[in-house]
Length: 85
Image (cartoon, rainbow, N blue to C red; front, side):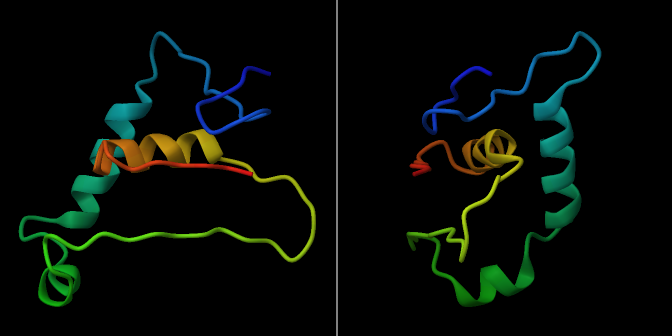
């Protein structure tokens, strides 16, 4: 398993000649946003707002999809930083 940008043991999705992960993510984000954007977010969150988030677990376990989540965050906002501990 390769190490991703998030830390030790984070799997990097293997590139595939016929599958474009970024295109899939962009398509999903575009579908979610629609032609007017996310109305609730636009009405309630200032454009200059920043945020900090924490994923936590009550018990030890295996988290799947970390590398894909990082890619989604990166495509939404290249300034997003992930630190998986």
